[in-house]
Amino acid sequence: MVQLSVQFVNIATSIVDSVRAAGEHIARIKLVQPPTENPFTDKVSLGRVMYINGNTIDEGSYIAQGAAGADRWWNDIAGFVDARPWISEWEFINEPSVNTPTECQNLAACTLRWMQLAKARGLTGTVLNFSQGTPELDKPTYFADVVRYAAANGFTLGFHEYWYGRIGNPSQEGWNYLRFPKFFKALRDAGVTEQPNVSITECGIDGGVVGKTGGWRDTIGEGDYAADLVTYRNMIAQYAYVKSAYIFCAGNFGAPWNTFDITQTIMNTVAASNPLEQPPTPTIIKEPPIVIDGRNLSSAQFARHLQTIHWSTAPTAIYLHHSYEPSVANWRGKESLYALKAYYETIRWTDAQGQVHEGWTSGPHIFTAPDGIWLFSDLLKDGTHVAGHNHLTLGVVMVGNYNTYLPSGPVLDNTVAALALLCNRLGIDPSNLRFHREDEETSCPGNLVTKAWLVPQVKVYAGRQAVLQEAESFAIAYMPANSLYKYIVAKSWLPASDEFNISSWTYQWGYDSARNVRILCRCSVSGGAVEEFAEVANS
Figure (tube, rainbow, N blue to C red):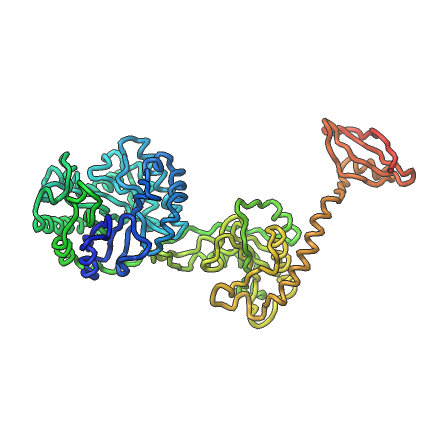
């Protein structure tokens, strides 16, 4: 059953003592501008950012930019968030305007992008946080994609619910509070059946409901207010997807908000009536199938492939692994590659918020095997291969188990080639190659594989490859099927240049060693007979 907690607008209040004394009867708290140190170490915490560098955040400006606004939010506020790792989840946007279709569309795009960026950072949050009485019931469908993403990825939808006077006024119920069920009914009527968790991120008495200012202190006594808060908690408890609710507020920041500030008597009454939170039934988020490349390349093909790749931010490290299984003897090429993909899609892992996922979203980047260099995850994107070290790193896996013997033959050749080519392409000194066991408790890439043994081999290959790559620019491409090449060879001359185009003609130099002259031959770009355009001394 849901508990009723409180939103702290500051922690210079005696309510802190009541919340701490409540123990498990207050399992969650919400803090505006949370401090860097955690004042409630036994609570699940929701944080809201109102100010950056002393300036009030203009949330409307983020929303107006749609998805781009979410990128800007994280750019502006990530430092504040990162300095408070103890916050369990973050609130995004407070009481947004949703009066027009454009406002709804911008809010939906901004919120969806914010969740995607939060997830990429290993974070979760509570989004939308609609004001009491909003949105109008023709608006929920604008947020269908937000609802679906939140439900699938462990995010929460927030609603504010208020009343005036004693709770139970039929003119307010279903509009100013208990409105959230109508939001989801409108979505279900439109075919959106996904159900995310809900948090009532603000609740209580607010004169704004009837066009007045002020909170409960201007309206009723603390005993009646405490009783009505308990009644409200029991009302929302009938909806299993409501996971938390926060009274507004504890502490204050001046008039008229001081009239909302609850007392220890109210907090103690609410806490005493709260049930203990039941441990949630673990939900497992099934990740989508991994997308892999699946091509098998020779070392020469891999070298050419790397020249087509251009990173916006280049990887800074390369990690070497061994597969352990399959072994070299069991390797079956593409069949084994897809078996590894299927295995990775069954691995369960827990994110920073304790949410369990099934399936990696990517894998290592390359498998070096007896039959070639296999491309797995996209080299332009982060893979999954070393816990905590996947960002801007590449993972190369040698097929085989090298705890009892060293790699050799084609596996070793392809491994040395792949590592050397990657080092050259990324400007990484082979001495700085990393082994999996350097950052996790494992023997990978094998007990017998040492840097003293492997790195010199990679350096030799990398050095030779660097020379070859530079020398390639001076080579002449022989194209025996082309008419200019055929003409030059038929004259017993040597091709002395690559083909090149000027205007509508294709040219190539030939060299007559008997006369020590160069002959410029040409033919029309569209084809036709070859003619000798000019002859010059070879000096």
